[in-house]
Amino acid sequence: MFILSEIRDTVALQPHTFGFEPADILARELNKKYANRILQDIGLVVSVFDLTKCGEGKIRYGDGCVWYKVDFRLVVFRPFISEVLIGKVKSQDEEGIKLTLTFFDEIYIDKTQLPAPCAYDSSKQQFFWAPKLEADATRTQLMDMPLSERLYIELEAPIRFRVEGDEFYDEEPGPPKATEGVRIDLTREPKRAPYQIFASITGQGMGPLEWWAGVGQSEEQMED
Image 1 (cartoon, rainbow, N blue to C red):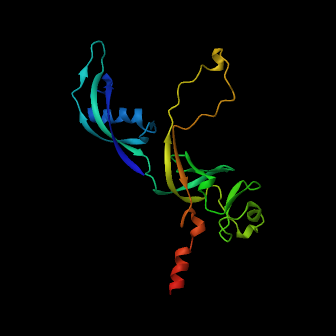
Image 2 (cartoon, rainbow, N blue to C red):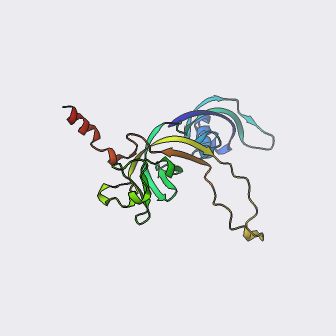
Image 3 (cartoon, helix red, strand yellow):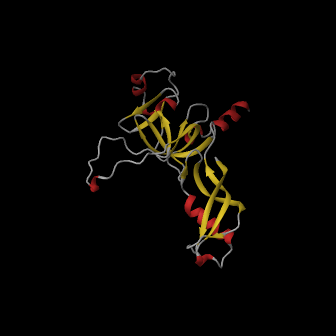
């Protein structure tokens, strides 16, 4: 889920920091710049892990700062493909489910990545799974099932999911704002997240944790 990524950057130390250990101040300045930011094709930066190389500080003419060239490693959130994680259900609509890990919210499960047979109940605005029906059951069959036989995916429920892929999006600069005297096309698509993860909950043990609560104990009792 977390990886180390090595980066090189040039950092300026202000004169009021000269009395402190340069490495500590450099790490602090790098955290200000990178922490909680998305780096394209790298991931979500959590924090600076360490400094691996630091050049000699140089003072530029007309500038009171000391400039350092620094190689450092960042702790980055970017789960690998097929990694299994546990998050919480944040929202649902007819197209799928959005999950959260508290510190990262852009995790999506498309409706095609739900266990079969599955349907969206518009009255409760939740998906449900019907394990007692065949995988190719129709929507009519699903909606005719008693509520007691439906396994709903509740909001805020802990859920185990598998990472199927991710995507970075670097938005190009847009036109000036309407307040600057330029008309904006209000039909434009909503702003996309710079980093998204696509997941699934198909397969044994995947989905809300309550679906599988006690399964292991039941199997052990059957073996006994």
